[in-house]
Image (cartoon, rainbow, N blue to C red; front, side, top):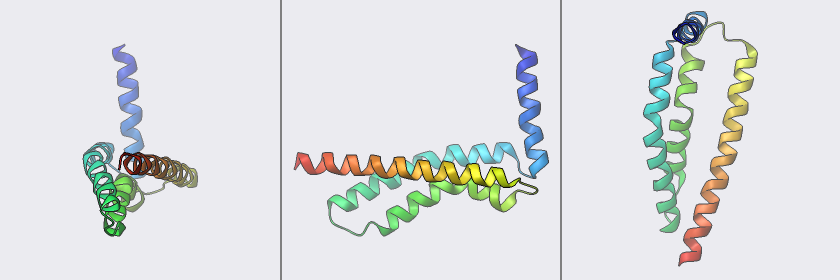
Length: 113
């Protein structure tokens, strides 16, 4: 089992070397953005319910959602085109899923009123 863990660790670290990014920084940004993204979604729903502007909460949620990928795009070198395609596909899917989740939560909130 430790051989497998070593192989995975070596492979993971080689990705960082190949593309000029630190995988730990990418992971730290990714994990650290989760609570801020969640707070931004709560802020968005609150503003929607109170009929305030949702522009800032949407921008905030969007930024925290893509922050790790921004690091990859800005700091990365020699990143193959298919990595960009996968990142774009993930972002589109996740954005769509988040949109549906927000719409569902808004409907539930409106039904409670």
